[in-house]
Length: 79
Image (tube, rainbow, N blue to C red):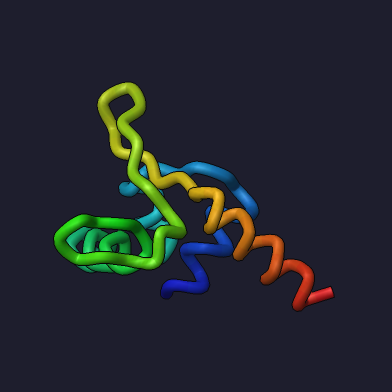
């Protein structure tokens, strides 16, 4: 699921949490745990690849600079 979410963000750009859940077939609770792993939290740490942003009343998942660098590495590896 981690790779699938990162690929979605690499190809589509920022997506809402609801759309990511629907596309990946995950309940929101599992998505939130995945975002804790991929994001950054003072309490839990994380990989710093994504961050949540509020846009028009909904939470959108956005890649950080570290996440964009990982996307570039993933794309280079498949070429």
